[in-house]
Length: 258
Image (tube, rainbow, N blue to C red; front, side):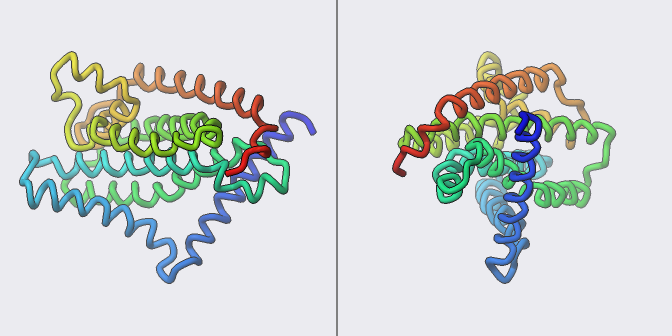
């Protein structure tokens, strides 16, 4: 089998596994796919009650900006955590059939993306109801979405490649994601933070992406193309390193006892 045929086979495996998992989720409960929307709504509603109704925090556009940050963060959080556990959770498959292990991390990233899409469109509908106008800069959301997808797939693949050998890393990832959640600008606008703290915050890729989402959707400002290009290059480097790790350690995963 040539390299191109192998890649085509892996892509087909990812597509099939994502579709199978989505169907399984839909058939597992009475409400089916509606839970994909209910879960993030409950998640967002809890923060809304706390920050707006209880703490009375925020400017007139705080709700729209907060929901923007929370929606895209949820996509990132679920994708990275699922990818980190992909090799361990899928061992029943790859111990019986020879499949490139990175396929499972990419599958988890794509699965989280499939669940994110209806929630994101629901958020766009909320913006229209909230009074935000459709602007030309909304087109700029497309490259931002693609860059975030690349970030989830590359970082998830990198973390997923080493997690089986470092079980304690899973705990560190959970704490690390919680830390990133509070410094990514979900609750505040990074642009309002004074230097040099602002520059330090923007080292975090999600802080950059959340800022660009809000600018494109709410503020009518085009995303920072140079920042997005730098993120793409970083993600491509992570993909290269992750693929090298998988190639080098592929035979050792089967010897692990999880």
